[in-house]
Length: 319
Ligand code: R5P
Image (tube, rainbow, N blue to C red; front, side, top):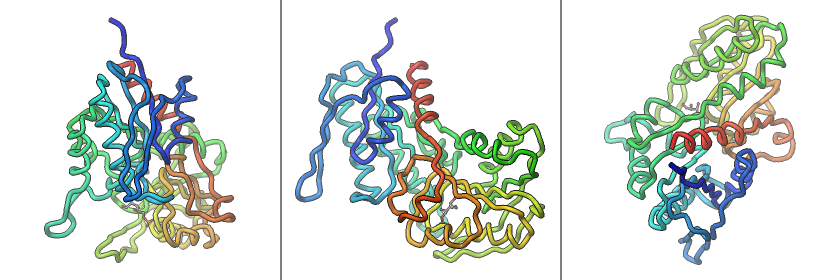
């Protein structure tokens, strides 16, 4: 049986990352055009025949740089719908950063469960498969999507980055809230296995209600050790700063921040100005367009294109 040809599209605003993924796959990005209209509407269409193709569309769904997360979401949905209508055999949405993933449950009466509504929209336009990297809550993501979903963990990236830096210094992986404990544990295990030496675990208490963050409990021994605080994303940077202050008070010798997605919304410069972090490490799923010179120069960005390319190749091979 001959396999369907693979086409990879990169939508406006995600083009550099899509080009890097295409390079890893040793293919050229498939041709398409996007037009923006005066009233804010837009249209996108493939410029090549996709009939019978295994089509992948990469669009990272953060807001900013001229379009909101909603604009980007619409662009991805409509283009995927157009590919289905043009006869693509299967359309896979590759959203390295998936918007609305944090609204995965009701925290107030009558709250929306937006993750589930986003999943329903993906399926409504004929998207047959979804790939994302380090989602906020893996169980909620997998339950929201009825179509096959592939989650690319950031743990191997972080472990490969930190393992050579630590050498023989004792290290602890810290979760800044209990919700992220499994994520931190994945990084801890990956780091331990790469280093061949024990790596500790620590946790910070955090509750958020009505935009107010509380909780002061800190569990784990970081005294005299290198603390690596791991989160899914950095928005204002407040979560990482709280955890870093707790680590410093508990006697950590050195503190690093590692988060898959660097959104860096208002106030995130404080992360760099606070003088607490030896390094702040993110992946390339979201360009650091909101960070100005000095902060940007101090940011370490790990390559997300390689694991995304591997995920696309695996999906295509599995058919
Ligand atoms: C929340 O539970 C997430 O995992 C992140 O910890 C949070 O969104 C980070 O936001 P900020 O940087 O504004 O504290």
